[in-house]
Image: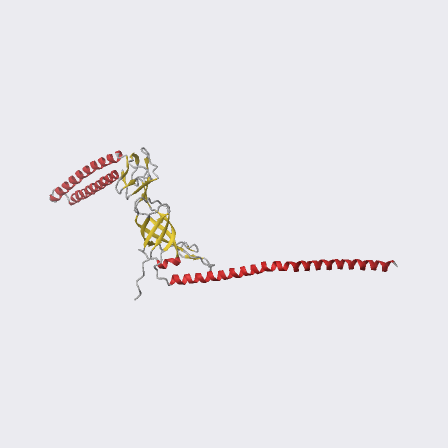
Length: 339
């Protein structure tokens, strides 16, 4: 009798459980029905925003294609501008290249402007003056020996076979030739000594500015040691990197207007072009052959080509320095019409 009663309780418990779950499902449906009117505008807004974004992307792609086509068919009269970097060539580091000694004169100062041929420093010439005197004495001695040997050889040649043998004549003639060679060698040594004496005066090879002057009076300068750095004042240019899509409108010799960041004045120049860039995936091997990477990236960025602008005119008050930032406007000249 207890078993049927237990089954009835279990059935009622299950019924209550199902009823509770149905009530929860109903509450969820009612909550979703209440939220749908609130979510619908947001979903529609996102859908519209996504559609607008796709449309803008298509428009930008079409505009870019149009710009590329226009650049290909342009009349090449539109100025091209790009931020560039002004660069100056360091002419050379000046120092005693063939002679060494103590610095006894240093008439220049750091950042001083010097002209071509101006005296920069003097190496102690004492030893080199002595070398010149010794070389001059050696020349005189060799000259006297050569003249004496030549006279003896002539006298032997004028004698008959009864007075001197042919072998003796040849010996004296050879001695005269050797003495003449020794004389020429002494003359060459004298020339070298005089050149070394002149090299003790180190002069500027270009018009420029003394920079990074570390040498002092009394310092010992060795052969090949750089003592003075000189910036060539006539070698400044502007280096820039133009996109390759703009190079079709630029020609060597085109006029350029250079606006330095630190000055309001316009610097004038003209275009020169550098024709080489570094290709990382095509470096040569030991035999000089290009090693091309087997994987080629098809999505390529526009390469930038270095364009050199030579400076023609610098306004008064503008001081050029290596590393200055500049903006350049190039005015391409019209192409001659095709015949």
